[in-house]
Length: 259
Ligand SMILES: [Mg+2]
Image (tube, rainbow, N blue to C red):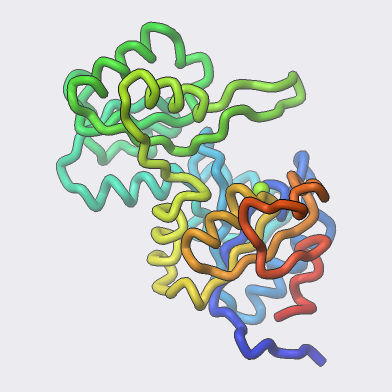
């Protein structure tokens, strides 16, 4: 018999990388947990800070791994940014993002000379002196800075790579501006995710492997959270945690025991 928690949520906001899959493979039991949550009629959102891919590309990737999820359940910083810009009709942008992501923003007016916003995401080798200096000048001329996410580096099979946060930090320092960050752990990100579900913070639980993005984001937005010990998790992180998860599980496979 399942014991039903008195504080049973209406929705789960589940991190993808490190929680549902890791290094290109589904985490053990994760596919079944998603099926279980769907069967139990929970509303679901799948979260990621990846901005190099559109929700459509992420959806294809998740389906290939065997997850039964819908494209409109995938919530990344790119989508959060689109919602943020939609709420400011007429605002123009200079984009520092790769072409697939730029196409995702096609409804937003582009202005490369005097934009309202400079939007910085994964731009890989697009970041060079010329492009960064151009962005710097736009900021000095009054544009505001938006960062899709602010991770400083990432790991690939070829080694470590600078991530867009390193360039955002450079632009912030040079232009004396603070970026509005769209990805986890920003409050903006989690608020837009909750709005898309028409739920209040008390009705949702965040599940993730990353204390600094998932758990801190939940704390910023006053949601309960579950830290899973897969993916990025390291035991030392629980000694002086920057944010406190409500619960800790060995992996997402244990979630159906709770709810
Ligand atoms: Mg993760």
